[in-house]
Image (cartoon, rainbow, N blue to C red; front, top):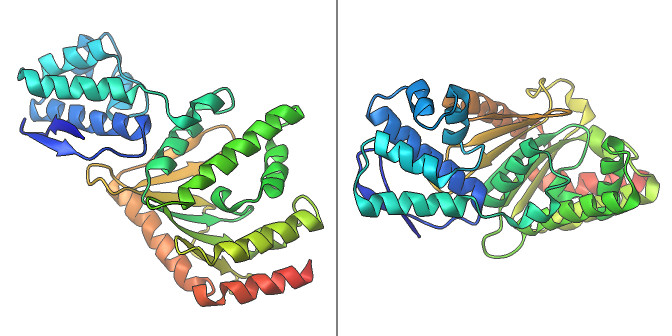
Length: 298
């Protein structure tokens, strides 16, 4: 448990999150932002006190970078937080936020923009996604994942093996009492494209059939006969968290980077599109029969 002050300076207790350092950084960043705004201090002035830019303050407050305890201490002093217990709680949070997550051993493979996503995925209570070209990463078999990874990485076999191992490790989020709830809407094209060959696709579709029996997984398919649909902009993922301090996050992956959208008006728009997609897609009850039909065609 972590006791931290709210915007008014009153301490309160936040539950430990399984998201590890990523979520702790976001929680600490949110507290620093509230304290700064409560004092009417600009990001530029805050940056000056820790010898940093406006952009660095923004990244700190969004939890995108690690914290130096000295910087946090200097900011707390600037924001007028002098109570020893409250300062100690936030400085402890800063130390914990710098503790590596389980995925740290794969850090040589993870670009910083995707390492953020892995941490958010680890912390999320609900993940909703729309996929166009591939099956969602949390639902991929090792053989299918290997084929997907090879599309984007011309690398030695041992590196590919580690990338597959990372993807399989992420799938543990679908297991246990704190399992994430995954609601994946996938375009039929992703199931008809013979990625990795016939046997790989058969194994993947059979795995999806098995996963439809997992109570934490909801799978819908947008068939070809639906024509155009609401998600004209491409694939996206929405992550939701139990902690009320954490806003919903929309994740948009690009070739060499990613966008993380947190503004309520942006998230609401994607949520509307996701809800519309779920109506346009085949009902959940029809997913097993659809997958069986795909399996027969392979």
